[in-house]
Image 1 (cartoon, rainbow, N blue to C red):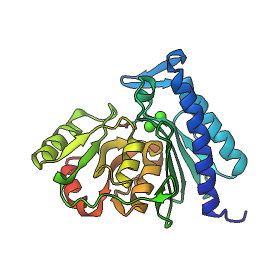
Image 2: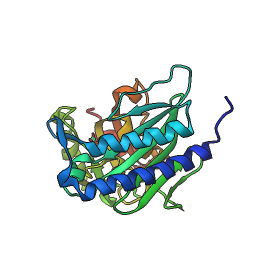
Image 3: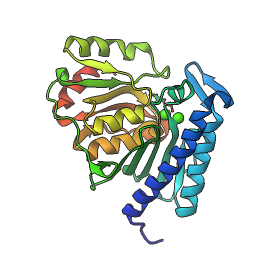
Length: 263
Ligand code: IPD
Ligand code: CA
Ligand code: CA
C-alpha cells in the first residue's frame, strides 16, 4: 500500500470531527429525550455517544480501509501489521453534555508505531476546531496557536482532571502543592478540551493521574505542536491501558514534575 499523505488524514479528521460534532450538538439540544445508562459511579453513556462514534468509524473506514480503531464506545479494531489506529472519543465530557453544560467535544487522533501523527478536537458549541499534524504546528480554526508564556504556577490556571479510576490520594497532595505555590485550578469536565485550551494558551497546563488514550491523544499532540511539553503517554501500553497526563509550557515542566511526583 502506498503511504497516505498525513495532510490528507488531517483534512479528513477535520471534516469528520465537524460532521460528528454537528450530530452530537443535535443530540445535545434534545438531551432530555436520550436513553442514558450508567457505566459506574460518575460514568454515564447515552445513545448519542454510541451513534456519534459509529458515524466517525463509518466515515474513516470508508476513507482509510487499512486503518485500525481504538474507540471509547465500540470494540477496538487493532492492527498487528504495523498499521495505525484512529483513536476516538465521540463525546469527551459526557457528564457535562448530559447535564446541559457546554463543555464537551469530539476528539480524534491518528496513532502509528507509538507516535501520534494527527490530532483534532472539535468544540461544536463554540464552533472551535483545534487541529495539529506532527511537525506541522497547531491551529484553532486555521489560526496558529501557542502555549502560554507562563514561567511560574502563579501566572495562570491549571486544569486538573480526576476520575474514580484512581484513588483520591492521587489528587490531595497535588491540590496542596499547587495552592501553596499560589497556583489556581479548574476542572474542565472535558480533558480533551482542557488540553486544547492549554495548547491555545488559555490554561497554563493540564494534569490528570489517569486518562485513556481516546481522552487525550489529540490534545497531547496539540500541546506539543503549540510549543509545549507532554509526558510520554504511550509508554507502557498507554494506547490500551491509559496513563497519567502532564502537559503545559516547557518553562513549567520542572514545576509540574514536582506537583505530580507522588503519582
Ligand atoms: C472523561 C473526561 C474527564 C476526565 C476523565 C475522562 P468522558 O471522559 O475527559 O474530564 O477527567 O478522565 O474519562 O467520560 O467524558 O468521555
Ligand atoms: Ca473521554
Ligand atoms: Ca467519551
